[in-house]
Length: 178
Ligand code: 5GP
Ligand code: MG
Picture (cartoon, rainbow, N blue to C red):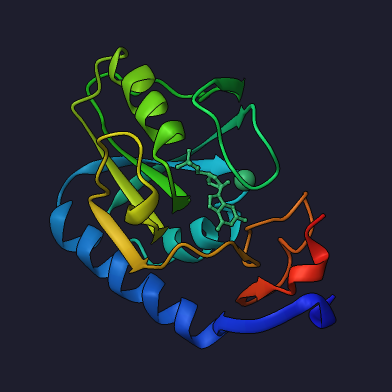
């Protein structure tokens, strides 16, 4: 599997320090509050697991799975909710934890969908952001790294459901895409 990777962009240590600094910001902003941390399955699992262990404010963990119709590498505007939250978010502070914000189609829809449940607040936390590809007006509140228009895999991020288990983030060899 490592042989499919052309180059490593973020090592395990670099990812850990991105998690440290995001968690520090969240911990400072939410002192004394009770937060619902929403994991967007499946891509966010590694980031989420590493992030929540660094959060020191009282919190609830909950999970959502969505799919968007489109090719393996690009999302479309149509979002399908495959698994909804199991806890109520009414009156609560919510943070949506995403692996990567690309066109913004997914989170633009999900934020609006969750806002109808009357939470106290909703913020977006993303490990990676590709603002150059944005199609919807959405800006993350917490970002690990802004990256160029590259398709990355590993640390939860897939290509055709593979490579999620890589402990680092990298770029695939061009011959893998077909
Ligand atoms: P958006 O709706 O913002 O265009 O897409 C967000 C979703 O597209 C992410 O949660 C992720 O599943 C997928 N995605 C966007 N860019 C990449 C990328 O570079 N690599 C991988 N593996 N998935 C991506
Ligand atoms: Mg995905």
